[in-house]
Length: 151
Image 1: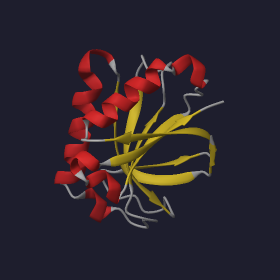
Image 2: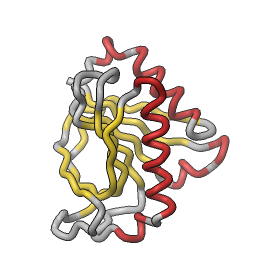
Image 3: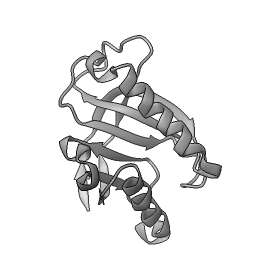
């Protein structure tokens, strides 16, 4: 368990659910937009170049609707470029997981393991997030940290 400080993020978002493959399609399209429009270069006040994929605004648990937010940490939300959104996330307690292997399959497999442990993790469903840094672009050797909010 780790204690995460709060942070601000600017990026793009979509509402989706894990039912019937909806999330795979919606989140894949979100990543496609983020990359094809080179949004990383358009976000001001970046604290680093790590891309965060945040899951928040949960309707219930992992079986309900939620918002997926893709962006980077910023020092300020004062200047949000047109077409992008900004949000501040409070700090809290998180359980870290590590997805390892070829993406996106390694991410999917790690989330399946998290869902299988849903009851024992005592999840708070405030927000969960993934961090994509240099290690996430290594083919079969890729890694991404996943942080699950817990009570």
